[in-house]
Image 1: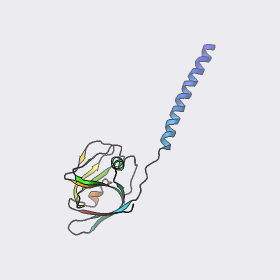
Image 2: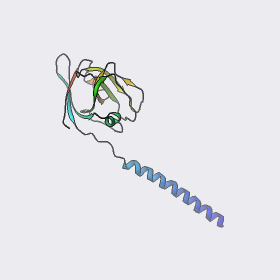
Image 3: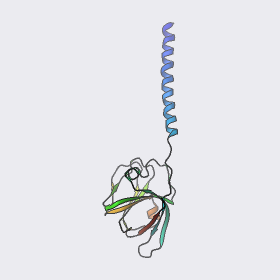
Image 4: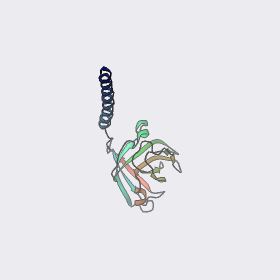
Length: 165
């Protein structure tokens, strides 16, 4: 009889420990904050030949090592009128990937004269495949996948932006 009671107590202890561990894990997940968009500027996309406005976007700026490495990682969604602009100190060939990025994106590479030089369309969420530019770029604009097609964005189209930091 003592063995049965002792076995029952041990089993109850093990199960309660396991359940507490699961609860803590769920609680930790619910305490994780989603990264919220922070408007730091505005960007206008324009057709090369006519200067007509293609789109106007609120932008978040990534211009230091941490922001550049993190980008749009860990975000669950992004409205169509928002984007992230990566600003680099120099112009060179660049390559991005989608590690820990939950949103499908179009990645638009832009040179130092603010002309589109390359577009990687419909980058797949969580994919670590390298997505290189076709030419040197100083800026990279990330928008929701499909927008570059909807806008009929092409190489040679231009951007202008202002930062309100």
